[in-house]
Length: 276
Image (cartoon, rainbow, N blue to C red; front, side, top):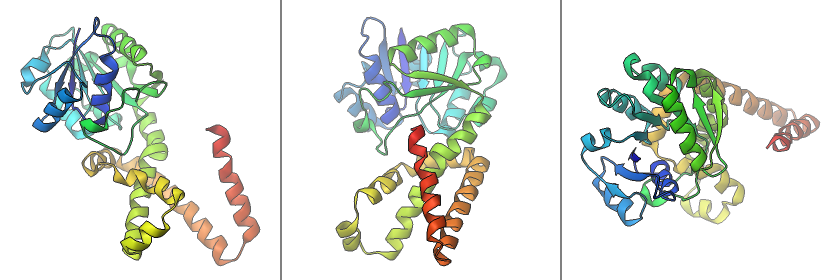
């Protein structure tokens, strides 16, 4: 089975590595608008071959879209004329706009998924062989996909050892806003607020593990995250508003020297790790 991967960064490159463990089953073909990414993907053995011809990718039995969410919407439209036995799987971090934008005549060809994994790094050199192993793969609006496409996606997700969870696309986007998207906004805000108050020498000297952990995802690609914020704007606004209320509550307790209340507030937050 020829599998085409559009986008050879962290997600696409890691997928290629995972699929290459099955040489008798899959032939992995990479495509990327960045010519250097094509060369790097081959050198790093992320794929079996690369092409800069989009028509070659359109001939693949399965096409993965591991590209920014706005580009996913446009690329699916460019795949209108692919064979009706093909399967398209997108890995976008927001789902409702992608799912709703797919042309009706090809909707059953598409499986909309979001792997809940990743790092702040990007590009082919960021690829990790076991990135998807034991990680959640959220599949949205599965009832809109064809039976063949469901089966193929399910088999591939089994092969890369992902744990599949099914969800409505709008439900996914609201959950993702709180659990993934808003924390990125917080990390960007933290990084900007510190850099505007402290010089680089003080940051290097005093930044401990906590700061590094919280600011790590501020290294994430602005190109990718701007698109995600745009597509999931309303849910992210709601999540930021609720987060701000918690920050204002903390501020109020500090102003009023309500140490008992502050202690209880912190104790409540500790319960999160009983869940995780």
